Image 1 (tube, rainbow, N blue to C red):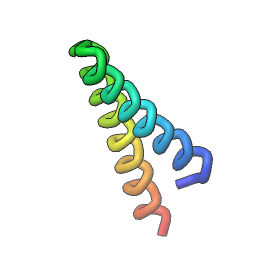
Image 2: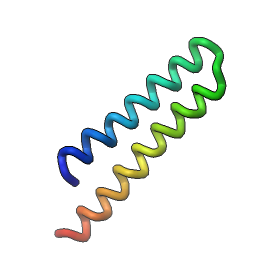
Image 3: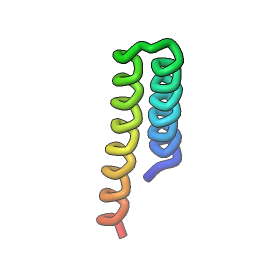
Amino acid sequence: MSTGDKIQNAGDKVKGTAKEAAGKAVGNERLQAEGKADKAKGDVKQAGEKVKDAFKD
């Protein structure tokens, strides 16, 4: 996994966490859902990169 990919995936997770927290703070369920989706997207991308790395070795 390249460093750029790691940073981008971590950024997705951080962005998702922030959106989810903001949604909870203001009672916005749609924002909470978007935050959860962003976190999941980061996790899925990270898992995919790990699989690619496993096959490179």
